[in-house]
Image (cartoon, rainbow, N blue to C red):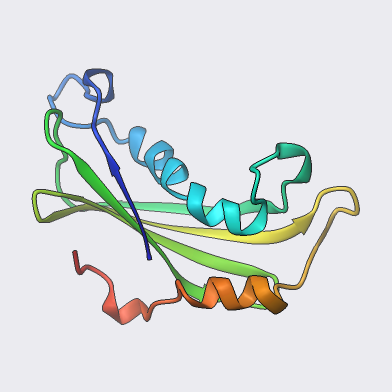
Length: 137
């Protein structure tokens, strides 16, 4: 599991005084950087080997400015060429949001998916977690 701590900016809030719902997909993408490095170690977009196929976010509790947010990132499915990344946003011991992102290992030049195999698969398996184990800080 990867862990990223973020400090919400004042501009992340909305008129209701909590973190705006549009910020969570951005935060989740930011927190996937360590995962991206497994596919593209130098993060060079010209060598990028992933595409995003699906993104869902469940908003479970309000998140607020002035308190750090911890994002947990792990895999809940590892297929032949795709994976499901699950992420949780925690603040003060409370789960505020959960996201599921389906990503595909992809060759942009050939416009086709690539198998996830060898050392890459082994490194990804280290972050695979049972979906039933979700919602633990």
